[in-house]
Image 1 (spheres, rainbow, N blue to C red):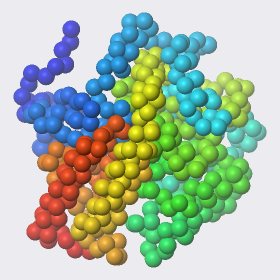
Image 2: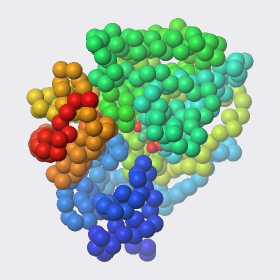
Image 3: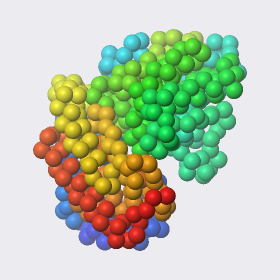
Length: 464
Ligand SMILES: *Cc1c(COP(=O)(O)O)cnc(C)c1O
């Protein structure tokens, strides 16, 4: 058997990693010098590194480990499925039981007439499916010129050519020839950073109405769809003003364009409902799901599609699919994950217990001298670091410097909290308990204190 159990010292692992392993979204040379943190085991909300440090995972891996680490049931199901049918494809008029059962389950869980599932191996792949599906849908309706998809700056929809184009990350568009044609971006509903003197409610409406302006500019007969995350995740957990989504919905309805909700982070309980669309009052035609679908135990994503779009697409051969669409092991693992979420009432735990408890403690961080706003929906939260709460100013130095320092302090204090620029973000496993939330908050506060001390000392405490 090929053993992947570790017997090597940390420095040796780091040297091998630096020599051969290219990391995503990472400056390789800098990491090689510093050495990557090696994670060896995990249980519940805790991850353990190769030096034996126990770290509270405030990011649920990469937003995905909803049920926490170490659930044997998923390992059992995966092993059983591998023995029975490790792989078969769903091309060429064949199917298998795990894909059927998972599609049926997702149709039950998803709201309204979102009854049809196209499987993928990841969120990026599912969003690539969505680009081709909505364009093909309009072509089938006799409107092939309707191929523009509107999205938002600072959105994250994945890292492939298509999904990276849907996303509005300037740093990604600067590399490798993105975006692909006929994808355009409007401004995001980020009141803290971009709202100026306006009232949040007015700002939310104004940002939503940029969709209408864009539709008119390109011509309503050219626009296929709008895509958005109910709450932007990788962009910094940006909670939109309450006025935002109802106005987006009104505009999509008015112009008859398809609405795609990217639920890759928000789906499966993260916001305190099964889907972020329910929390935000959105009625999408298509939902993208991944991450929490399998709690990250196996790679799987999907597009959950409404009757009208699915039935139209079904009239022709859709020349699209992935070898691993509906992979039987991943589908079986996802089903078991959904069973646990349902039977252990994890979504209710987020809504009624962990969410409200964390919200109170999180918002109390606003009394810290470094913290401007502290926002949270369910179990996804962010805080804006600022040298001047009243003006909501950024720091004078390069954006992200203070956020990076804070993240380093969190690492040193055995808490995983990420930074996006000078915003700190958390999205812990959904099963986190009150005691664990207390630890998370204690470590976050300690890290903020240390960051504050350090930046005062280093002369970084100045407004831009
Ligand atoms: C992570 C993410 C994706 C991409 O999913 P991958 O599985 O990494 O391809 C898409 N949309 C959102 C909102 C995400 O957070």
